[in-house]
Length: 85
Image (cartoon, rainbow, N blue to C red; front, side):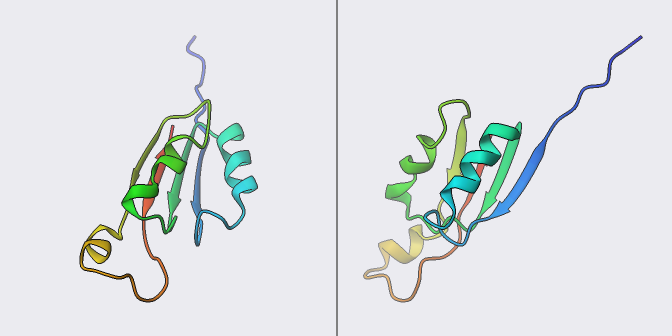
């Protein structure tokens, strides 16, 4: 008889990494995979995601690379996705 496997997946829209980091910490502790949108980090700050959890690997992408290379960033930060597994 085969046993059932369970996989806990969470998806979270951040509105910036600084907003509610404790929730992301809890999701990383209770989920097998965490999908995160809108972390708003530029490419040179993605290491804060890579080093966020001691137990999960992080794959992340910034949506602001083109805006940053074009010159001074105007307006608020935007976009970005990350997967913790």
